[in-house]
Amino acid sequence: MLMLPGRPGWGTCYYDAGTGRPRETVEVTAYAPDGSVLARLAYAPSPASR
Image (cartoon, rainbow, N blue to C red; front, side, top):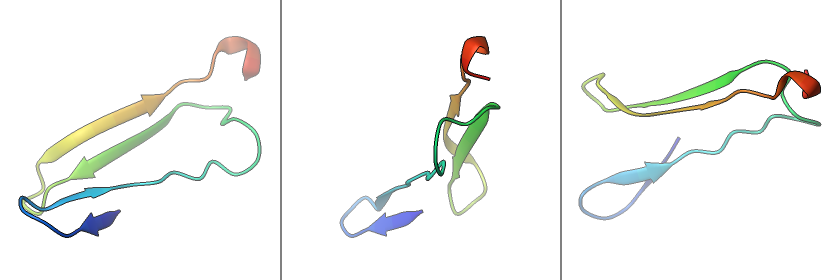
């Protein structure tokens, strides 16, 4: 997670899957300082690419 300057505070994230596509579902969750979920993203490969 990368926190960027400014108001309100915000950030970005980067996921490196390595070489090739993931073979299983990958989920990324961003949390606020208080532990609440800010965003959730999931990538599920198609059955043909597993």
